[in-house]
Amino acid sequence: MMGHGVIGQGVIAGIARHARSRAAMEEIGSAVITPERGVEGDCKGRFKPGGRNRRQVTLIERVDWAAAMAELGANHRWSARRANILVDGLDLPKVAGSVLRIGAVRLIVTVECNPCSRMDAIESGLQAALANDWRGGVCTRVLAGGEIAIGDIILVEQTMETIS
Image (cartoon, rainbow, N blue to C red; front, side):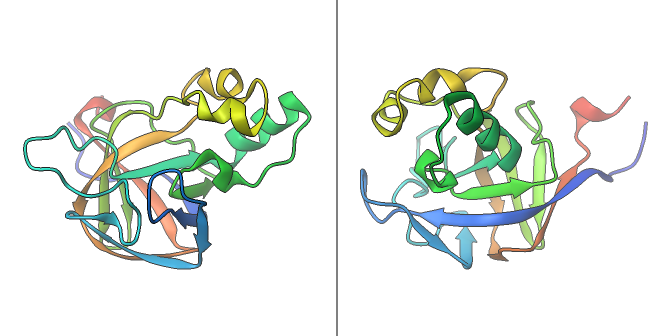
């Protein structure tokens, strides 16, 4: 069995939040992430005792957003996806239980971030364009909090599923 290690890394290319449901996304340069609130100032990250808490922080890959935009001949900002973190240079793990680390922040992948019908209000066909192979991103729960900023390295830590 291998020891605990890093199996991939990329960089944070964007951070966004929205203060209330259906509010416009606000792109920011840095954020505080906590186990109690997810991304500070974002309405979706609050920890709910007794809840599943699968969607505290959401992440999407830049290449996946770009592929969806190219497929539709569209040019919307990545934050239109309503994800919290845009990741560049990293294939996000498609396995629940995978752990992502950004400095002191640790996030555990819970589920695929399935695109909802609101995506088609942005661009006809966007929901379907994001539905294939986790292209809509990943949902995570916060294991450990801290500060993050655009340009920070994001690592995929080795998990039991990735140990051979």
